[in-house]
Image (cartoon, rainbow, N blue to C red; front, side, top):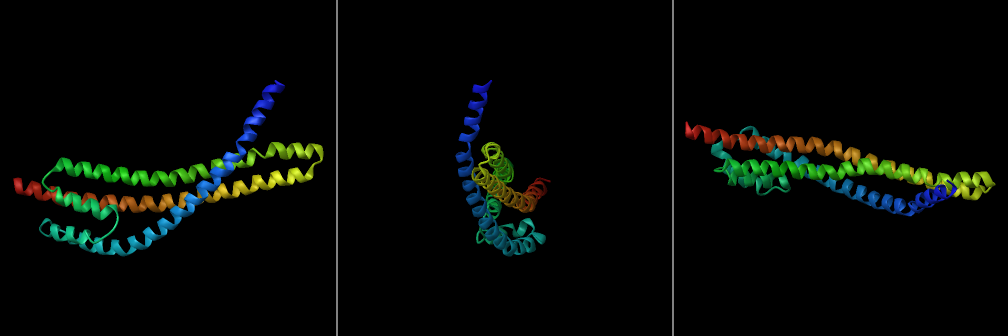
Length: 201
């Protein structure tokens, strides 16, 4: 039993460096995604006003001119709208484009979900692993070792929570954005579908 305890202690202690490296990596990723999200917010604020104004009065007669407008905008939303218009003669291709757009949105959201869940997990691991040496230092009266280990524990906890908070806030914002985007592409597809039904009747 004593040897098993030592093995578990060595294994858990050996995870401290990988956990700290992972915390730093995800912290960099969190700030990078935060920067990209802020740029995306500014761009979307400008472009969505233009798109929504055109979508409110959109008919199949004017859908080609709408496609020309979308060509001057950035991001996956206008690209998908252009492709939908280009494939107005094929319902199967349009359904595939809608499914691909949904998958791309989910892939983007998964990056935020990873931050929001992995950050607190790494923070908790970074808290618990140094507690063993800290308690050992307390038992032997080594206050310096205890203080050092407790600082590591608290610092990794704070960074893990920062990562999780950034990921959670980005996740909520992007979920609203992508829900609105999916409504827009489905509206364009419905306009095309409606015109196809009217031409057959």
